[in-house]
Length: 239
Image (cartoon, rainbow, N blue to C red; front, side, top):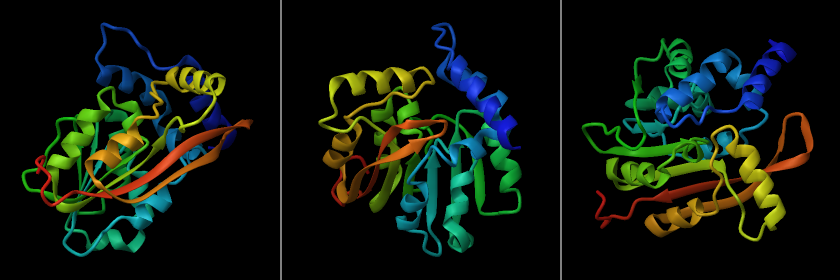
């Protein structure tokens, strides 16, 4: 695919996500990602940092039920490597049919992987699960607080919540904050400094790291991101 695939993604990024008030969030997401779905992973391998580190730290014991909210193309499951075969069930949930179709083709041979077209703030499996994670999806969800609350409701007491995503680090100067907020916001990414604090208030923190990574074709700019792993409190009222 090479450069031509990158150009397709860059063209979509330049156009940005349509913020037409008469369209639903799901419609905007589909319009934005459908033209670049086939090239999505190649470009974002160099942009979405920390995913492998997050998933390496997540539990995937035999019999576990795992949910990824905002799963996109299902690329992240490949980071589980051989552990994935031992999971009882893995649910991939996303609003975008075009990205889910890529995931469907990628994981058609895995009987324990199920795909769901749905909203991360509403999707709920019948039984409590062992692990829920978000990989660069919380910042795309308008009501990300509701998505986290929903994740906690579906988790077993003591279950694991994992997040890797862009954010605005505490202490970042205002000009840089304004630039990054507007630049990412053009493509539907809502940068915030609130997510890590919100997470730490609601679950027991296992690990938290604030990091930076390069952005393709923009060598002078670093993308701030964070990696969080927490454990649901046994007496959590959300259970």
